[in-house]
Image (tube, rainbow, N blue to C red; front, side):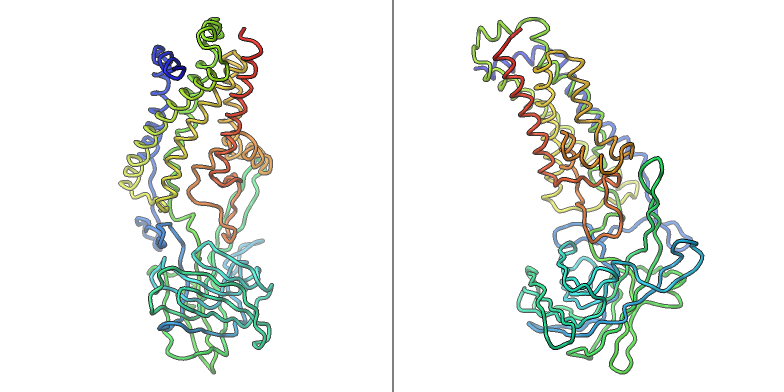
Length: 494
């Protein structure tokens, strides 16, 4: 009964429905407008070409999967053991003078043993490896990582038992320490097992005095020597994920392997992990949400203040003498209509804008379908909770202008200030933990990956809270605002 009454009140004010329609149209319009103006191209030597789409893993995520792989077939269960040493390499034109090619390895250069479901980029894998500066690791599935000994030379062992892959490390080749066992679902009977080397770009991060930072990337290559390999022989060399283009250095120092005296030397470059640079994140087409929130906030605040301004709240309470139920019904109606507007906005913007981007040869980073569903549904829920929060603040303050300003300052301003580097990085991160703006984390499709060489700060578009935790922060603010407004309504209807 109360819900129906509040819904009828909402329907009678045409301006409120128009405001919500405007919010949805703004999200759609700005998303499509941005899509028409974005282009993308890559260089192959001196030629400008369309950028290739990154490979995808078994879940559909865009991944980086580029390395040199010296391998052989493994039928059924088995293992490989080798001593991995002399990890060295080349870094082109590093600081401070940027005038020479130097010897050395970047922190996340990797060399070790791998089991992989074929040699196609994106195929599932597990690896035990040494790194340039992060010791021995066990990695799998492009994101999983487990640290072990802090060394750059070690004996490594990798075993397969069905779908279970176990990594071991030893300091002397005699006493072995288990790192962990990972499970690769649906491995075929025959997989590829062997030695690999890769090296991501060397990065220089230069802080901007006005805020933010600039990142410069330099090509690198790593080499490692593998000895005491068991079993040995029958090796095939594959350049997984390499393009036809070769840098000037690679033309004279090609990736691959050489073998002499029982020692295999492998050279490689690239990265194994999530791809965050090979395309545009899908949530970028929803940046119109910031502008679309403004009319929604105004409508929701007016839903909370109008009856106080016109002194009709006493009539409402006389007909329905339950302040908590009245407040909850109003919040529910605002939340429902805001959710409907959000579903329309997202349901149109995502497919239309992404289709327009692909028509302009823009690569969009692939994500798994649960992630895409979370981005779409989460954005609509964000709008719904934003409406409830704005209603609660309006009903609590009972004045429209202060309420609109307060909600905008708490919800819309923090992510803009943080991402544009107006605020120090730490301050921006805390704002996006504590304010309702934490909810924008629900839109992040590519999560921060600790093993990625590039910075992953708020200014780079990474939120400090997990997606659903960020949305929960907004939900708590909305609940608190409605509860405070209800408390005040019980004390005084004037």
